[in-house]
Image 1 (cartoon, rainbow, N blue to C red):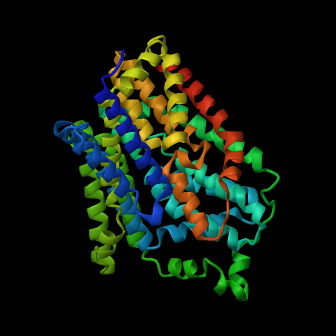
Image 2 (tube, rainbow, N blue to C red):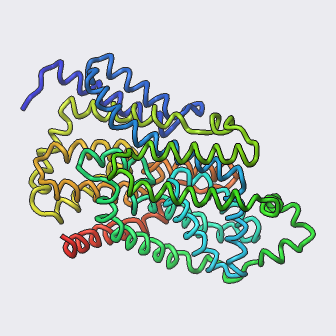
Length: 453
């Protein structure tokens, strides 16, 4: 079917805006915040009439809840960081390694997994990457021996957003559109994703087993060393020694309680974003009462731009739908998606993996969700296709640094700390572990579905 000249020009205009928006987000000229190109592209598409006002209102309703949930989660991270929880974690990771580089490797992966599960993947990257850099500096290992710990951190922290769905904004945005809630999502995704994460962990260990040092300095020996005052964690030890342990326990209890409430309270009419807001306010208030620290730091450090960024990107992707791009893609994929659960699963997972590595996972998941909701799929196939897309978004997207914001943040933090890992070096490592992990996870999903459905 042909398009009128005006329609053709609108398609070219929309693709140009989408390409420029994505390029500016990834390139970030002059260090601009990624929300600026996202909202600028959205405004240009709105002015052109490609995304009308009623679509804008609909998009805001979809995006606002997940964005507020993620912002509130990061606020909780800010509060916990300010009372020394994560510096305590850094010191204990090294202590519990007890002089074993291999034990440290697995401990770091566990730390990154827990950080993402209890908070979110971007926050996990921003907090654990400096911790890992501090750790590898403390144990004084060769530059090549740092790579296993750094790559384990970024891959596990990012893929760990898959099991429960609430740790990544890309996971949350489409849940309601496909008729899933966090409980039903977790029932379908938890077991396959844990198999995928275990596979990724094992592959990373096998890949780096020769670089991981067998023996590392024990932290107790380092603390006894007169030069420990110059070590990165010398301040951490002082923080831990002066930590308010009552406050520590209360805050950790609240975080676990809030996280559990995401799965229980929605059944009684409470929205996830309000649960998250409540948790953030409680932590801020308890810290204020206990330590007399005002919420000013939260106001400055909280990533308020996430809502603007997610909204702008969704408008940009929705413009592709309005110009007929999703309809064209739907005509190509319709036969595969409706053939069987397995074909829908693999088609969705691989499609989003490819798109994510070309243009980042957030717009890819948005586009993919719009696509599968337009295909006439039964509810079960629709939900399986969506979970497969999230597998592609959280695991398959790790093939290049471009695939997720978390990996781009990781590269930024490393560069800021003087650690040079090129994109080609990243790709060589990812190529050895990510495709296998993606396939194993998709197979595990289909086996799990066969067992429970």
